[in-house]
Image (cartoon, rainbow, N blue to C red):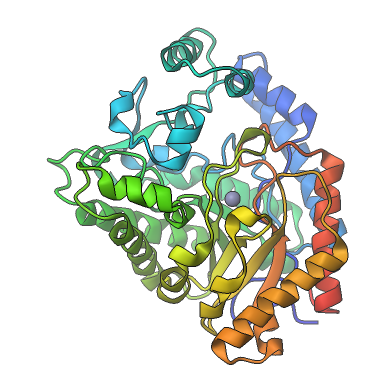
Length: 442
Ligand SMILES: [Zn+2]
């Protein structure tokens, strides 16, 4: 049975990418951070863990195989920090961040999640103790220099942005390992996740995301970002990638009315929130103009996914639905729909016929397994909204859908508050639901 839906690389049973790391991989990674394990030992542990997670995906009947992001600490990897013109900053002034951006506001009361990756164990302590920003920063900084922990990542533009092969290196290595262990006939299905082109931009106050003597406007800044992403997609395609998922946790911040109001009330901002949202959509569209024709491109949106299942923002798709679904020229969207914080399926009435939606109706944050019949019913409900809103038949609407967990299981290597067995049960449920709705399809 054909596993392809139109020219897009989508399957009925999908996942968003990151999976829980096995304990032995985390152990070696922490030891490597402490210089108590070698790079070869880390690579061996990663290889073994990737073999395991690839086999699990195959055994469960998933086809868009990925490496679980096991070679990354955070979902965004090392792409941005290796571009020309982007630099990691140590001990940044908290005043450069927009304090109302949900991850900035929620995690550190003023510092973004990019700074929170320094010390896993401390992170857990931070979440259960009252925040003391100066103490946290002091400790993180001390760790970085005294204990050789993997540095945190506050990355910012300091000069003209340009492509650098070093930025692609990790992506290519991750892809090539999967190509090595998977049969050739499966290579086109391999899925690689990459960070979003608007990543890092939103969190910085107007005028702080880049030096004004380098770029006068956001448009000038994004013109170079667009070129870099076009180049990256081409490079990955040339190495055999045919299935890419761009992870964009910032887009759903615009679902949050409070964020929008705070943004619009910020006297420093020279643009309104909705206009900035449109600009981000335009950035994607310009990238897509030069995306390799045979490359399937999807974007994953969610409301945050951080250590121990934290989320950052809330709000249904209503505020952005028409512009997101109709203006964004990316053909595949992975959408969160597992809890009420993502609202109802009603906004799907605006889905155009050329869009494929992966419905994230199974939580990757909570261990409780969703009811099988309820989950099947929810997919039919989504199809009903599409059919009723667009005049397409229910069958046509169903054909535009797939099912997945609502996000990864470990956007941060420490993972969500679910067990390995919970994760496997969730993935099995996704597969069973798709077999019920689309029997015989992959
Ligand atoms: Zn997500």
